Image (cartoon, rainbow, N blue to C red; front, side):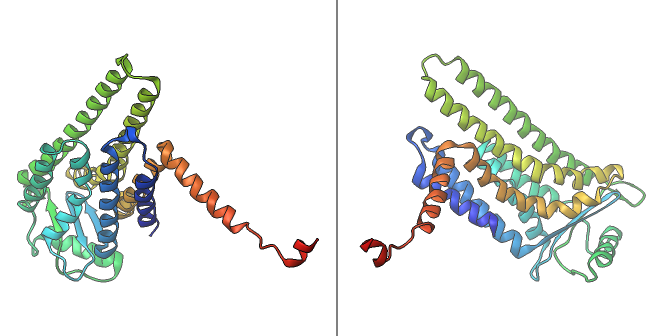
Amino acid sequence: VPGILLNVLLIYLVKRCSRSELGTFRYLLIIFAGYDIILIVLNLIFDPKYIVLPGIFSSVLDFPLGAPMLTLIHGTSFMISYAILIMHILYRYWVIHEVVACHSVLSPEDSVGTLMIREEFRGKFGRDISAGWVVVEYWKNGGWNLASIAAAATVDAAGLFIVVAVVSLASMTYHRISISYGLSTSTKAAQMRLLLTVCVQTVIPIVCVAIPYFCNTTLPIFSVTLPFVSESTAICMSLFSSCDPLAVILLMKPYRTGLKSLVTLRKKSSMVVPISPRSTEA
């Protein structure tokens, strides 16, 4: 609920308080906020769970109509923001490719790894989910499962490429703004604020989504499991949709000012005291 309210507030502030120098970036902010609301609602409905064992990664939706493909689509849906913000065509390809690559290496429902994961789930939650399991085994039949490892490496390489691209583009943009003598001081300051906002909007999903996914999907290859990370992954994904609008509101002065005026107006209206006839006579 706080995440939905923050995103609705951001949409209101963008439409009400945006300055002309923001240009079309204001529409991107509205798209982000609207999409974050959808993510929050889907997360509440699907209630994802993540369980990791040495050599095995798994996720499932605590949802009556679950299916492996639905679980995969839900996981990758948190990365669509990158497609909007960074690499519009290239990264959209990687998002779709990730779903197909992961689906091709899933373990069947009767595999040893799937049975182990379901037993672990029963031990933690005291119940069972029969459908919708996404289980990837990196060690199978006494040897490495190279197809699963290759799929994980492909996803990691795509994520690393995006991070490098973001850092490179941010550095070049900062340099270009710094040496642009034709820009006024106020325009430079506005462009720097926009750049900072975009960078923070990129860091938030890296911390809340990419790092937990890396810990859950890649570290088990080396028999390293971090239970506290897998158990808090769903919470981190929810925080992503809440922190994103909060960061924009706090970093961009027009929206900070707009929020302050809203709070001040509310306080003033609550402090209005009706004048009684007796005080008028005095």
